[in-house]
Length: 306
Image 1 (tube, helix red, strand yellow):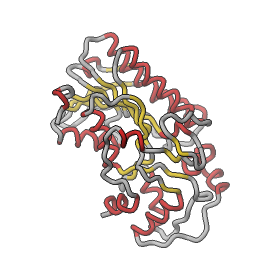
Image 2: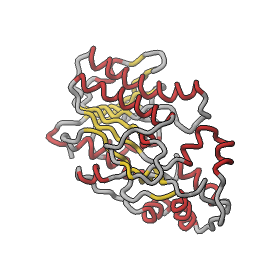
Image 3: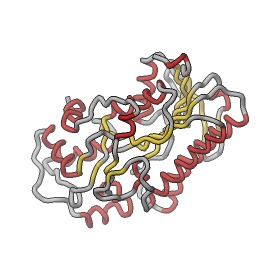
């Protein structure tokens, strides 16, 4: 279960989000001790919750006591509000300032932290049409790329502390209850499903079980280091994903697409989230030894919808 008895206690930032909640449950089942950093006190007797306020630069210094690894998931929701200049700053600062607060604490207080595992996003690559994107590919352009570049630079500052770092560029996590899938499934359920834009844009999807699986894999494999795309091996276009959801829900798909200009009007600059194309490759994490539980889209959706 544990590699060489190395990592037993894990501190998670952003632990109250969807990934954080699922990861906490999985870690407890595997016998890890879990503690969380949160803006509010917790009420789970199995998990110690420490409070912090990133904007105020406050963190409970006891949070790193006995901790072997930090999993950094904290960050304001990308699609929660329209992208004003103020909101963009909030999105970036919530990611960069939070990890900086952790590193400041690790520099100034005795600890036994051996590993940093952090989320980042495939938004790093920007809108790249049909180009197959490996971890070696250059960053893209636009706000999403700028945010991810700043995020990854902030994470990499942990190297000055001599800490091994794993960064997961997360794709579109498919989960029935949260994130992009319920939003995509809703019009399909209402018999109004249609591809968005030209429908040819690549969606770097991943089943929620594999998201959790990769974090466990990074904890259990102490030689794992560097950046990895957290995406399924078989990406799908928006049209393919829409049709696959419709097939699973036994609903039709309209023979026309939702025009890009409509989405631009509704969402503004944020429309890049649904119109951008990111064909990210999973080869590197596969080569490292991770075995996907849900590599095929149709099977992944079947598992999700039962």
